[in-house]
Image (cartoon, rainbow, N blue to C red):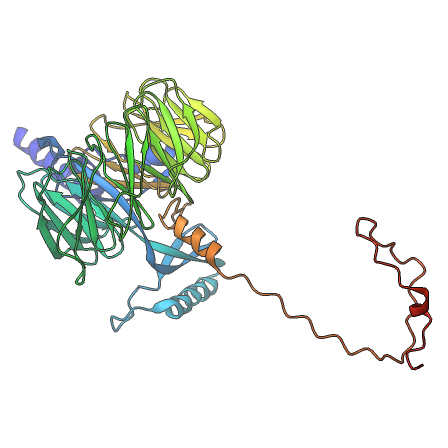
Length: 507
């Protein structure tokens, strides 16, 4: 009887595995925020993907987002009357393995609408141009992943250096990716992750992640130096060194053709690409507590350990305004649109205007900025919660429980939310109905503003030359209500009486 019961139970478990594979998948993917939990708070899980990092063994993951300024794709979204949607991209392949292109994708979307109409279902088409967005996940043991930030598809995976050496966060642009492992600098091609070049860092110990401008990489060192390595075919192979007083703790910031980096002595230095000396230095009266943050179109934000937020001009270093939280700070500021989100250790989060530093609202329970959309702001607390706040007022909307071991990443570039689990899985969430990403900052705003200001203004069309006046024609009579002469102008000298009545043809 006991054996028969065991057989029956085994058959029932087997049926559950066959008929409900999702239940087994949910058990095997422990740590994931369920789709049901996300839907309760107005979110939906877009994708999740495993990465080769092991947080349980002390490995740290650095997650960074890159919004391309040169490449994008056109996507058509077809939605039927029941709300079911289908995305058709110009990069989808036809039966011959060739990309559809914009025209092909548009025809495919129109054909899909026609088929839905034949089935008795109305449909609409929405067109959107989306920049290429890449999610770089770097492990502290030298693994680098490049994922499509919207789909989770793995573009490439590679490893650099030695796993027992410390690996920094990456620096990147549309062409290259730079990362430091131990005492060596590696530059990878952003397209496929293959090695483009490497150098041994001489003259200092790397202190933080690098910065990148074109094919030149700037590495900060503990002594305050900024060492520049150029990897272009016509560039000088020798490193350039820029000096500053203090120790560097944070990666440099690149905006346009300028590189800025802070030190623990409150010094911010700026160099211009192609120049061999520091352009300017700004001395602040306190230690700087986070990396410098770009505030479009032409300012830089920095936070100090004593709780001040400064905004200064990128080109001149002149301070535009200052804001005080009254508490210590250890997080960088996050800029979304015209608002700065400022985190303090004990006094919560302040929402401040980028224009003049005035306070918009304050949330006492928030401890770390996560992401923002048009209507909501997402933050974390010290008790394992994600707070959903109203973007206009800061009022609490809802609380999302998360595993305390999860790593919620800061994203001030788009409206997506990225969460990493302790098992090495990255999850992406978006608000319900936000099919296309909202891009907050691309990094090219200052260049666009400068190009607009430098663009030649259209010249006024030259006035047509007046027709020659007939000296024998009678003088036209002015209107009865002709304007009086300007009394502010000096009067013309009166003509002599004999000149007024003189016959021009007389002797």
